[in-house]
Length: 156
Image (cartoon, rainbow, N blue to C red; front, side, top):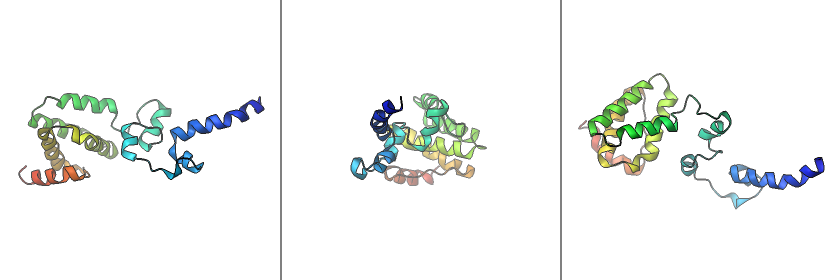
């Protein structure tokens, strides 16, 4: 029985190399290829820190804003007016006032799909999140968001 398992080591190593790039790098595979963390998160790869536990718990950890919650949020704002988006975003941020990391994760989820929204929705997010700064919300600004947020910051 043990002898049969020895032949499977190679197959197991190949599976692990595909799932965990660091394991592949450790074994000298992929030539030190860098991993795109943003893509890994978007693809929900098992090696990404925000998804590793979910693969074994079979549920989203309570400190994360789940994909199901975020999909419901996105659905609720899909055809909403600018004021409705501001209100819904502010309500969601306030509902997470006592759970800092979950609130951060909600903002992070917005940031990760920010480019998918139209200009009106982007403006509403910027306004709502600017107002939410009193709750400690910080939104990392990528280059495409930076000018918009600064442009909208003062008139709001």
